[in-house]
Length: 108
Image (cartoon, rainbow, N blue to C red; front, side, top):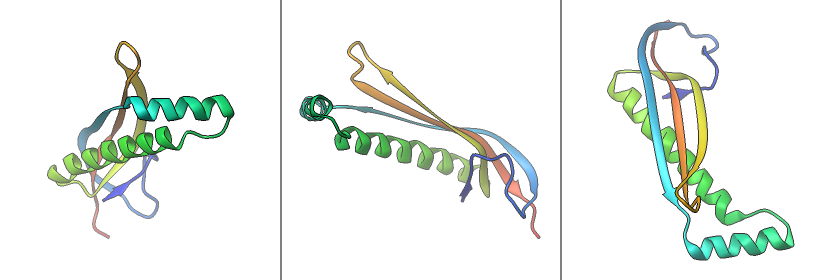
């Protein structure tokens, strides 16, 4: 499955648009990870705990979007946009949404 943020795929022509596809991932951050991230923020540096959680959520959302596109018979997903949101009363949840257009490519 080809997935790209561009609206076209170099060297290939889109034969059919199969519609919008979306994948979502909502993940909670636990108290221990929040504590370690707080220490990292106080002393400076990057928060590996949150970066890892963010990468996991992004990969999950993209994979889900690609699976939906594949079920529709798509060869690729173009025009992908990835959005990030924090949810919950204490911002304890992370939501990542990947959205794109499923397409069928012309056979060369």
